[in-house]
Image 1 (cartoon, one colour):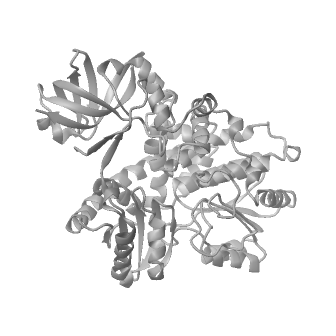
Image 2: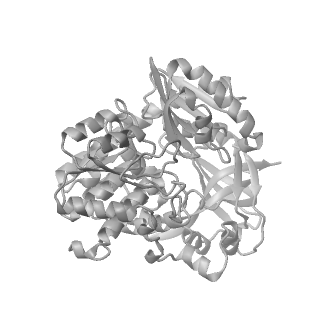
Image 3: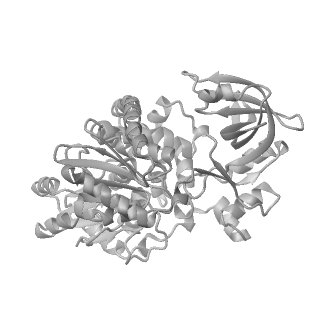
Amino acid sequence: MNRTWKLKKQIEKDLFAQLLVNRGISGEKEISAFLNPEYDQLNDPFLFLEMRKAVDRIWKAIQKKEKILVYSDYDADAITANAVLFRMFEALGVNVGTYIPDRFSEGYGLNLDAFEKIKEGGVNLVITVDCGTNSVKEAEFCKANNIDLIITDHHEITGEVPDAFALINPKNPKEKYPYHELVGVGVAFKLACAVLSEKEKHNLTPGWEKWLLDLVAIGTVADCHSLIGENRLLVKFGLKVLQKTKWLGLRLLLQLAGMTSKSLDTYTLGFIIAPRINAAGRIEHASSAFDLLTANEYSEAAEAAKNLEALNTKRQKITEVVISEAREQLLLVSERKILLASGANWPKGVVGLVAGKLTEEFGKPVLVMERGETESTGSARSVANFNIVEALKFSSEHLVKFGGHAAAAGFTVKTEHIDVFYKNLLEFADQNLNTEDFSKEIEIEAEVTAEDVNLKNAEMLEAFEPFGVDNPKPKLLLSGLVIKDQKLVGKEQKHLQLSLVSEAGKLLKAIAFGFGKSAPDLLPGQNIDIVFEMIKDEWNGSSNVKLRIIDYKKKI
């Protein structure tokens, strides 16, 4: 490992106070809002400029018994967003259709072939979730065929704004909504809250929408967006709802993964639930993930959960192969500012995962593509301070379509144009990407002593949950340790378990995931400094503190 360690300026002696300073949180009111948020701190959904228009149209469709269809993308954010609206309509006693495009034959977003089918089905109102912001042609089609289109999305607008019946997107430059980091499921939830605010039109219990928050939390964490502000509140309450979820499929999925209600946190959302939901759309059609979240019969939910578990295992194996092949390509051109790899047999369902892993490994923006005969489809992942969508815009003359966020995007390019497209990207990078942006830094929040490693502090750190983007799990520095003993653990012995002794003689237990190959470097008697995360470890009814090692440095 041995990456660059960057210790934040130590302003406070108290660990709790230092962590608040690091997050820019000060003042009693602000601290209380961060640590103990109230549900009513959520923004009013009607702050969206066209929310009232959208809600009135939905209630009109319900009252007139018009055909309503929810159109979503196929990733975890989109599937949970689709499920949020499906569950809301279901609770209102309204049957709605759903349309989830096939990643492999249709690709991301709205498409005219799908809308031809929607038109033939006599649909009057289409509500998009997590897509549609840049679908100008599809919006024109809807208008010409008397289909009202309500777009709910959170992707950046890359060109002309579609002429939809209503556009609800916090990234719309004209929008007045105060929080811009909602993901697709967050925007869908806002729409659901607004619809249900018309209390005189339904008989649901006030606050019923809170049952949707577990779905909101899953999609928000899966999409890797900021976990401060409104997203933090949605995820914090969503985790509480997940402990007693109404949705049968989620309960079964958690059981299959060996999770209990006490062990639920953002790790569960991001690394247990989300990959399984995403696996459906990555390997085959995403309908099995949607079925899991909307099933009301045990047999249907059990079948969907079992299917997702199998698909996730298959996805893991495929991803490992593609990462290995892509890495070989990138090592040949690793000096370039932006890296690109492509393969004719790489499933487009895993290229985003591969791009993310390799961006982390190389510390540079990475594009990974499935190379087709005429068109190639890819995913891009970026580093801090470099907006990958702006880079794609610069090269857009060579693209069939593209879209996404500053850190992650998808695109399709004519295969014959790949070389010139990549040349343009490198030109943009030369102008806008500094070598400092490539630094593989570990940001350390505070330096602590072995005495600070205790149950009280481990429990204090839990108050900062949910962890994620903009609110990372605190990484701490502990110096002057001696290795007492080590043990390789895990099925393939990829992990290293260590017993460490501090200068004062305190014994500390540590685990280093993925450090199996470092075992010869970390022998008993070796002096080391470590960057670690403090974990509360519960086993057989007792609680202890364990260190999760992130990196180490040997001392001579």
